[in-house]
Length: 127
Image (cartoon, rainbow, N blue to C red):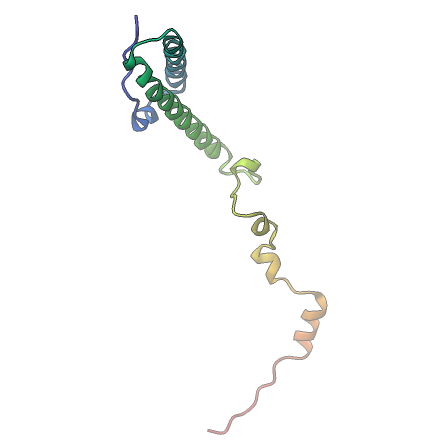
């Protein structure tokens, strides 16, 4: 009994539950195993062509599964002070090391005193 598995669509997977997705993944992996056996034993051409479709379907299921997992994690950590490293913005290493705008705007005590004691001079300009 060979399951006829049509090409899985990502948008259909998004609405399905976690256990349904994992079940689908198991089915696909089993089918891939059967197809590989068929390939070795000299199966029909239709079965060999199906290997690619099944592999891509497995990839689709895993992609949607991982995306939903990450989305749920983001919701959990939304109002926390610190985020896990993999949920933080990636950008580049240099940008991540940069001073924050607040840190950048800070002035030393010396600068503050100088600005307070020696303000910009105001000149009366003749019209």
